[in-house]
Image (cartoon, rainbow, N blue to C red; front, side):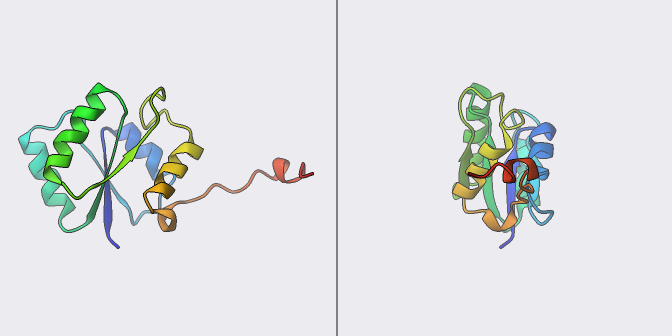
Amino acid sequence: MSLVIIVEGKNDRSRLRRLLSEEVMILCTFGTPGSVKLAELRKRVEDREVYIFADNDASGKRIRAMVSDQFPDAVQIYTRRGYAGVEGTPDDYLIQQLEKAGLEEYILYPAPDPLLADKQP
């Protein structure tokens, strides 16, 4: 499956890039996208399956709505209200949301902490 995740900014992209394999394309809107940016996204997405992972704030909701208009079949991924956007969301929660979206095969799971493994009951 060929897929793309659309995020708001480069820090969101960097955060997700650490958790996802290179075969997942991550594109940025760089803020509220205008018609030129939306057309550019449409062109770059081609026939890939689209996922939208925007912040859970007013700006993120506006961006999500605009991108969703261009990609009505997109899968929506959400971060929890209270986190400082996608970039400020803990890795374990990001992974949980990516799994919920069915992207397990693309997740680069962190190695278990050997110090925690030694403390099993």
